[in-house]
Amino acid sequence: MAIDLIAKDERSGQDRWSVVAVVDVVASTLVVTKVEVSATLGLEVDRLQESFRWRTPLDVVSQLVPSLMAAGIDPYEVSLPVGDYPESARLGYSARRHLTDEFLEEVARRYLALGRGYASTLARDYGVSPRTVVNWIEKCRARGILTRVPSGSIGGQIVPREDRPDSAAT
Image 1: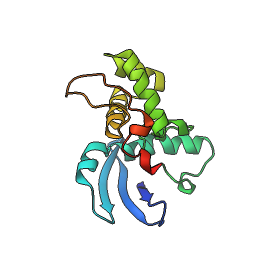
Image 2: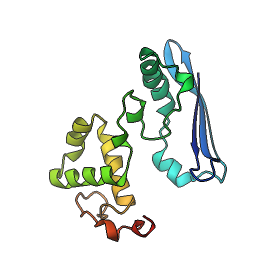
Image 3: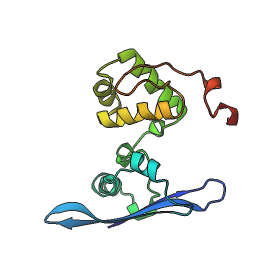
Image 4: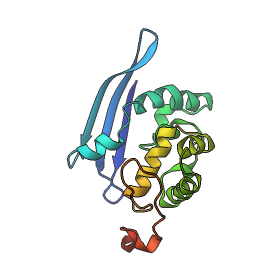
């Protein structure tokens, strides 16, 4: 099965980037046999290194497609989500889980309240992996929602919305 994940620019409608992956059955196991990643303006290799999940095509084939078929939905008629994997591979995935600033701020507040051991608690509460929760906290810091701390440390403070880097744009 070929999986095409294409992100379009909201203004122009042009493709920004795409991932085309082939998932085959080899020795009774689903495996990714080919991946092609492209971007019209060039690949942002640092961002790709940080955020691309090589397992996403397997999540689509092993989780999302069977769920769609079980619900009577033709998977070829569905626009696949282009982010938030592995969560978005589940049918019924909540739009709330899309990484809005509001959602990330909620996660950051809970993270600060919990302290050490936060990842396993939040993972259980949100039905995701602990690594996903750690990624959310990293995104909170990258978006300026949560202040940075020295490597290996936990904590920080919620940055007021009006003091965040992109607050002038909203």
